[in-house]
Image 1 (cartoon, one colour):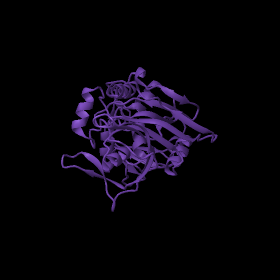
Image 2: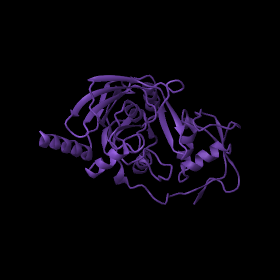
Image 3: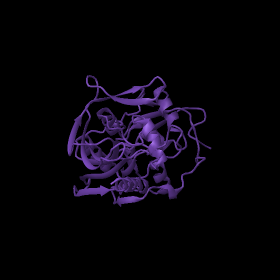
Image 4: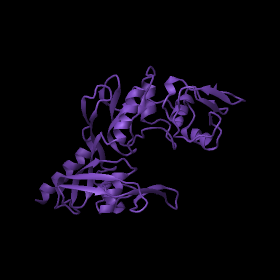
Length: 321
């Protein structure tokens, strides 16, 4: 075991490398081997102090800030080291960023019982890298293009582009029902809530919700299947939690395989036919490069399991025809 301090709190001055980082991410990098849940606990309890004051997890650090960190024992080598072979394929890479083809089933970061997420695996595979931070997130069951910044300046620039709507994000989804519109813009505010069972969910809330806009494009329809199915492209204008899934469910077009907002009986029948997970794929990102502003268009091919399921739908249509 490595001891940050056995008996006394530590005080640490933030240097240039920590400038602009969220304090939770800074502590996660500093306290290697400490679960994120513990880091959030010591932040919520006030055991961590920033310039002598309590601080929230999303507070940003500046050079010269002083951190007080309580005594914590950290593991020099996590018990379950992340195999380098499990790092997803690289779609594109340069000195500023790397784009990965994230598989479904892999969380983007550790926590909630997950020892190693994608970002932890990437850091373990690249111990020489001085900076690797997620630009955005994808749900654990969503596949597709994921950006990681290799420089702080790139991260700041890409975050600004996300906030200002200058990154074009496109997803492919399979839904239940016959989608009729070639293009359909959906503006439905969303709010998060906790169920009686303690699960975090999202719903449409027109009065108190946060604005959420998705534009859907019809790509293919299987009208003769029972039930009819549609392949739809979703363009995200905002990035609310579960936005595509909740918008589709509210419109009456549940997402195939969605275990939170979907049609559960239908999901079971899909599983028997080979679709074992949610059909939600981050297909394409278009943006200006954060360093030289050149146009970037990065695409992840449809994973083999989803492509095979679409081929099965085509075969069933031909058989019916």
